[in-house]
Length: 435
Ligand code: DLL
Image 1: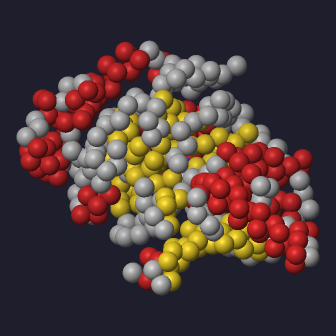
Image 2: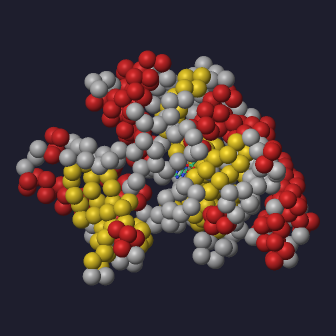
């Protein structure tokens, strides 16, 4: 039977949720208008008063916020409470540019712990469980976020943090951890290390994993589930909104329920900013409606996804988002063709390759080239040269039929691609280095 952490919220009727959201939205907008000069001047510019925002339907009158706004107001310019009320800071460097800083009051940390407790509960976690957290602890939100959720539930948190993978395996075995929290790429690396140390899934007690912080395909989910003997659940979030726990997967494993009592989601056309109907792909935009220290409004995540209110068999009524398809800034444009790394991952895993891959994009004489480098097993690697080139050719054809452009395929020996302990680096775009 499905267990809920806060059923009154997670299974609320739509009208009840809308009314809660409207009330929280109106009061948040009033508060940021009064306390954050940045929002006041943006709203004044548009001629929007806090009184104009009474219900969720009024949301579209508000201006968007962008990562650049956090950089321009670095470090504390978007905080809506005095620093003395802030009990924790987190930061994210992102892949490019200056880092951004966010703050939490004690109430914000409580809300965050609830969000992560909901996610863990949906993955089957109870107070009986031992939650092994291998997300990084520190300014990154992954470690302390998952930790807060586990403790809130009364489960046993094991704050291992990331790195030292051999030790992760020892702790998993010796402590009898039942739930693993880390990035999906690190989960695979832990699994590899488990097997390389002469153990199998039968030597550990894991039953579920809660993986996120980077895009991963369903094919990768199946590999992780098979290798570790677990159910693998997705969890979504971002520093600017709260960290992990903005959305989480339930037993259906078909997208993530969004914690709508705290975050309103919209999907927009990334080019025009127009709000799109449900079940249409676009950029996800979030508004925080219950946070005190850092209640960002209409934040443009650059994550591409779809939201849907189709009934979920778990009984939750919270809206669901699909796995983010990638980010608007992740999308590679190769000779004019849009390519998402997740499409390439799907082909690789579907064809029986590992998720140890890297995509290298280059440009020579104004001609873009794409190379997919993927590891193969020792057994396959010792195949004849002819056998190997046949494999590479088949993979290249499969990629071409899906992507519409040809990609060079390079098959590599095991352990040649650097392993990640956090977010995997999937793309090396040498064109950017040339700019
Ligand atoms: O990655 C927060 C987090 C920690 C989420 C642990 C889940 C688990 P940031 O470092 O600010 O925060 O990165 C946020 O990561 O905009 C997405 O592009 C990506 N992302 C996060 N979760 C997922 C996911 C944390 N489940 C950025 N699937 C987001 C795909 C994800 N992408």
